[in-house]
Image 1 (cartoon, rainbow, N blue to C red):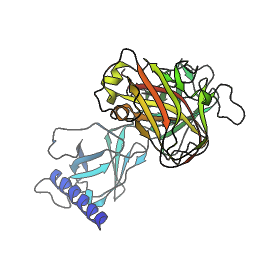
Image 2: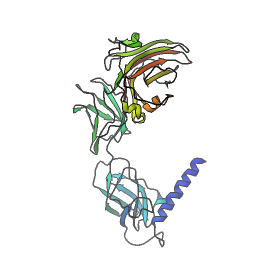
Image 3: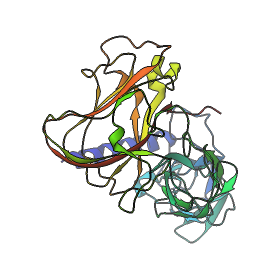
Image 4: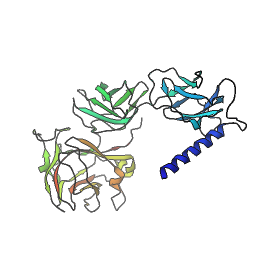
Length: 380
């Protein structure tokens, strides 16, 4: 019932907008040749907002005369979807097609019931690609990187740091997932995705080496616990190393059984700006669950000048990376909001504690690497 109400409500609004475009003395049918006077946005009050171009999916209003017999509207070589109730003698409301044109002539074409047509100069602005994330920001040379975003239109290219071109980029049917083979010799930095409609740099770094504060490479001499979990030479049954040593916790963890896989080591790698303005930063690390993480909790004590296991961020299940390394992203404000005292910069650094502690038992096989605090947005 609610869906029907919403549909009727939307139709009512659209008809009201359409009526606002029509003149007061408009009749249902007029004689004479169809004419397009101008195209505008669909806010009736914005009478001076005329358009020569519009973006994919944008609703526009075509204003003219004798338009009531319109049966098709084409933008370049893409046909738009028409709603009969949005068509009148004086105006038509229509959404620009979301699919990209293969042939671009920058023309809008109306086809009428008698087969006649009318052309009007009008461009469709196709969005340049956007990049939101990667499944894993650390992928070995020759491995497949999966990039998420939008407007990944073929032909497409991916450029890795150092200006090295990615190999065999491929796009899924939604134009939102891009896979590419990582070439040899890539260094840390932003990636660039380029299409015929523009290019975009990522707001994250590939193989990010900024502000690393826990890497197990090497294991700090002043850390209190966790050395038994360090993997230095992965065997055939271990996850592959992605950035030197990593941590693997492979054991049964009981109910409320305190299991710290990293404790101690005062770090100054966390930026002062992240402590003072945590909303502008993310905590990131790479995780590989050889067995699903489906029970217990993990306490993250990060960014604290003194040891405090009572006020920690709770990292909770379920997570299953299916034996693959995956980048985990947590807003740093969520980490810092666990503190009961104001966040202050500590010149001597901050203690890090990573502890399993929860009310359910866990058959654990989880690996970690590259704990870092990095900006959410990279300014040009």
